[in-house]
Image 1 (spheres, rainbow, N blue to C red):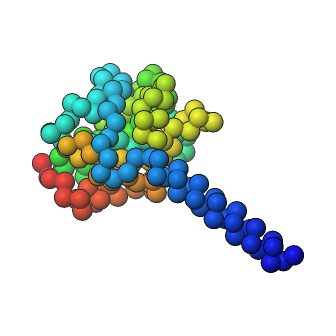
Image 2: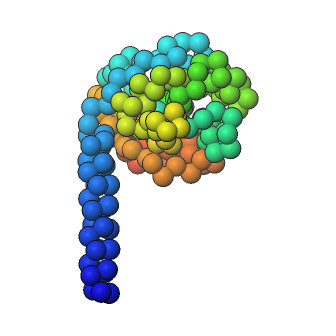
Length: 179
């Protein structure tokens, strides 16, 4: 009986691992072409990935919800350590499924000197594989997209308080040019 239970448990664990692996295989990977996005920014401008093609590396840091603890820390880190990112040839954004008005107020509250993008329909979040339908929100995942439009880095282990500084270091390791 014990052996049968152990064998069954092992099969369940293997099946769960296989399903997780399959889910990961279905998502975007480093080297894939990044989906284009066209989203309203907290600065009142529409930002689109294709505008940066052959010009700059693009960072889009998805977060779940404006005015929540971790998201506030993450977006404040981009405001506080933005100079480290601005020293590099990179355009950077944070993004959520919140509407444009809410993200505009959020940007003001965190002192954002960079655009916070709004994806209220979740279409871009879905294209990036970060949309959580149960919460109608994005997951906390950051994408670095090279100037040719290919995904160079996917960071799903974000440390909210130091994300911008950590990201600047990773960008330098990837060989992103300084301005």
